[in-house]
Length: 354
Image (cartoon, rainbow, N blue to C red; front, side, top):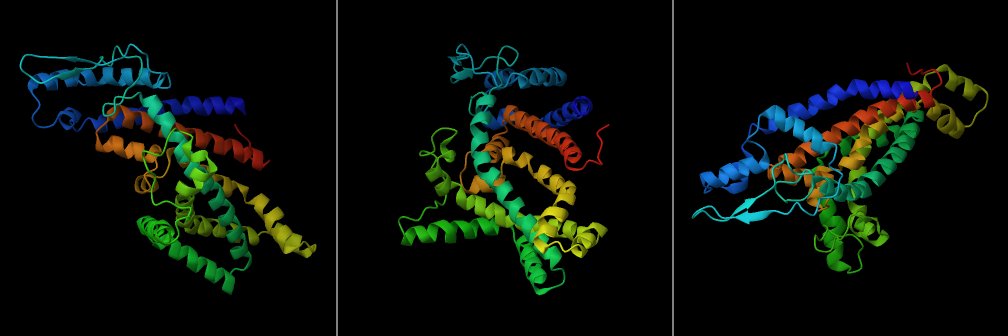
């Protein structure tokens, strides 16, 4: 197994490097210097800012330096990396930042913070929302899929599938708007003790583990989790139903029923165990989003997670943050693919890792 994991990891290194390369090429189509300095910047300001951003160097050098910084992004910021202010003739004060070739950590162009610190601060809020979402959605969708498959063509199946299609057909923005109004704003006007808040108050959210306190999680995360579960439930339910319907046609199900096994035992022991391969596939596809977060949910509920941080970086043309987030996302998806294959072998003895 470990040999297989090592080989797959080595095979995916070129893919990982290529993803970073392509993202850096695509980002440099735009001019971040003008976006940061505005239209009235002088030539001296543009020159200094370009040098501070490292954009005056050849692209291949920028690529190599980013890979170096990526391996060290988790390091704490050194105390000596303090920006100074210089005057250039009659031009306004220009912030002189350490060159990327001399800095010891990757810093955000927009917020002047280490990218590693921004990521470490953004991951816990995303996990607080997406972790429960993944668990609750998978549990409900699997049970509903089993029930629907065993009642295929009957009233219960038709009602469940109708609700699933309705859930899939409505935009997530509609759920967010309705959820905020009817789930938080309107009840809050009538009942002061209503637990849900419309959005996170940025001044109240303190520390990366703020959302893991039970009271804070209920106030700021439970409603986003409910909305996320409703949105994802339609897709997952239809997928699991299709998987379970296929399983109900196999010989081992007929054999189990002929032996007198109860419906619950057939569903949750025999069928569920043999359907683990597609179930693992579906869950592992969603697993990276536990860390990367949900962009719309985090933006509209003002949750300072990975998705909201990435959107802010894109709007600010903050290349170091975008590149680091992209590298992290790519690494998570590669790791989830490798882990999926390993879980296949553990769940099904017929699967061999070679």
